[in-house]
Amino acid sequence: MSIKLYPVIELLDLYYAHKYNWLSKLAEISEGIMLRPEKKLGEAFKNNKTIRQYLLDNYNIYLGKLKIMFDHGIFLSTKDFKLIFGVRKDPRTLVKIYDVLGVDYGLAYDIPARLHVEFAIRSAISEFFNNRINDKRLAVHYSMKPYLKKLIRELVSYMEDHNYSKLDIKSTRTKISKLIRSKQASDSGLYKILQKISKISVRETVKRVKKQLRFKNKINGKFTLVPVVQGLYEEHAKECLIKIVNILMEYNEIITNNNSTSIYVAIGTGGRRLSDYEAKIVNKIMMIGHNYAKANNFSIRFHILGWTSPIIARKLNLKLIYSSDSLSARVRAGEGKIYVIEGENKIRLKHVSEIKPNLWNCQCIVCRDPKLRSFVLDPSGKRRNDVRMIHNLWILKHCIANLLS
Image (cartoon, rainbow, N blue to C red; front, side, top):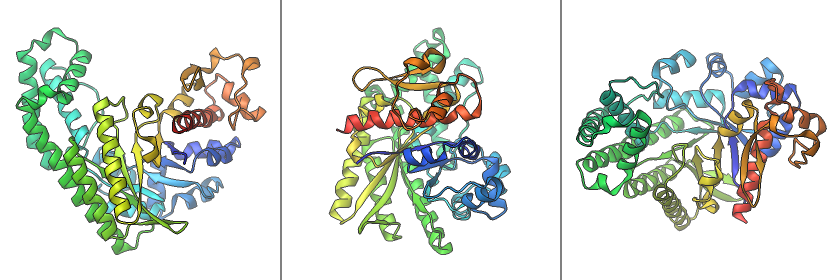
């Protein structure tokens, strides 16, 4: 079984893929795409059109069997979300948006424990250095606020007691992040606070999943809701997964394919390098889910959020992963960078200006086409050259296939 990679793109990427004749290659390399909130999707929703109909009406683009997964954008402010879709972001409106846009899979509106902790770390550093850090925003859940304030105070006190003023902001963030994950945190006042944040994220995430499925059933929504497992600690993540699985079965959120039934669940990685400890938890949770599903006569599909790095892939039990999303493949393509295989299952990122066309012998699905190959190796920033994304996905899939073999 190969892992399905969903490139994270915008609607205009599909327009250029269609215009420069590489949309079919996208469908060949990937089962589907992942979209996030953007102005054009807001236009489609306000006009009560599915994404497929919007593309057909506005660009004469037919998506065929290409599936659409929608990520509601956890860092998008509630104000910006309302500007795009014209409605307030909450569990019910998100279900309505997924249904109207006709997506195949929509990520549930979860309460991300790790991102709330990272928010507290950034806030504590900002307070300690009296320096506003320009970083990603997060709509903090009301139930988290008192514990985040406690965590911020605890971190500021720790930095004061350990002379962190001698460090720069980047080094401080690294050290505090390590502290949070270390045994030292278990032996300090941090642990109780982190435990509480972890438990709240599970409780509120499970409540939202149930609320969204109840409303989805009420409006007879046709998409599949994909809940995200939450919890900072293994015991909480396990609890969250089992509760989510039971709710999915209760509401019959089942995917039927070739006489087999499965449910779809997502696990986040934070989009960065996983520590060995974190990877171990992800693997353990997936195995627990696999065994629990098997005991109940169905299978479970795990979608891993925010990774396509071979470095992370080597730490994960790839045989338990059904799909993942890739933002890097598209971003690197826009930067004029492509993945190149070097040595045994090692890839390196190169700018196309470093590559000599006469020595280029890549056999991916776009480099075999002379016209598309010229787009891949063109160092200019023209949108036709974003076909490099397909090359990058092909290399990533090749690398993952080798790890699976």
